Length: 351
Image (tube, one colour):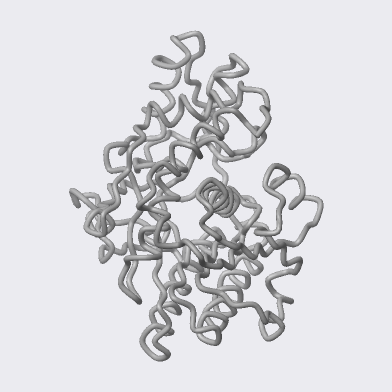
């Protein structure tokens, strides 16, 4: 396991109050080999095995090869893969008892959102409906849908903070909006299931999430920034980098998701963001070049007019609702990138 990731997991599970209520429980988790899904599984299993907590996880995934690679250090009787495509999953054949569902399966790269916009919407709606139906049939204790800050679209720039009710404008005639509109309809679907069928569902609107566990070749801007430092190359921005928003470190995201899963109100949504990290993309890049790379690299602007990027926004997310549940973020913007960069540098270590 990556050394930085191991440190992160050990630090996370020391927050026993986050995990204690899930002892002697079973989870069904979609998007299990993605960043958030895989780290949720690794954190829950690490806590369970260290504390004899008897947590069992059913992990939905399509590829046996990828499952074995991602969970190489975690294979065991308490981790049961369910090999199926979300579209083809027959929930009537899931005879096992399920206490909690975490639904995180989604298309997440901007390129795919544009080139496969129909599939992006299909996976969002059909997959979420299946998980809500499963939650209804299994009478689960709680289910959480992993949403995104992109549900906000372009909000009023005069807002000093953006609360869960401050939804803005989304251009529905742009294929890239398949992701943000998909998140919106899925949150609405969650609220409908909570209202009509009393399904105990909550939504977590995650800020941009980064940390150990991100693949070195990931195409998102956070990984690109970190690679630039590791490879001693200038950071090249394809936009002006004026979008200003917060991030959340992976371990903070995990504790936030589990807190909302357990303590959130049914049919409601919660921002999961570190408010202290509110910063523009350009200023973040400059901070990394200066404070982490010690000015050995610089920020270069190579502006391109392409439609793969989300629109520029100023999105100062408020996490007060999540704070009221007892959650708070711990990792600063600088430390988040230091840890990510360190994870890219460190070699694998044994369990």
